[in-house]
Length: 153
Image (cartoon, rainbow, N blue to C red; front, side):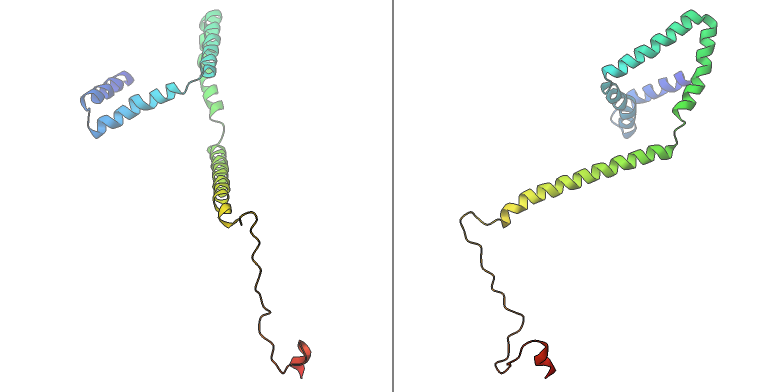
């Protein structure tokens, strides 16, 4: 059944070139698997060789019993891989997104400070401008007392 589906998809892929379905199938059946294969490292290949070697040794030395044992281990391995709740994965993803956003915000603020501070710095050797502040409101000419006593009278 799966072989028939695969042959049907490949036939559709080759006959529907240039259409939106053809582009979609090309992306799903060619580009994404190629990108995944391109991302494999030596560590991935070493792990695959190790698992394959252990499986072959168990099948060789255990004969029929080894194959039965491997067949019984597959559901347990799948259950072990899925024991983590989806919420744990979502928490990790949310933490990574928050950290990434915080780092971007920090980097942007650093770049803005670096761009803005030269605009507000005074040049070397130029005196600082004096402040021309006065105290709020001018005093009356006939006011001899200042502060609260003047208001009380």
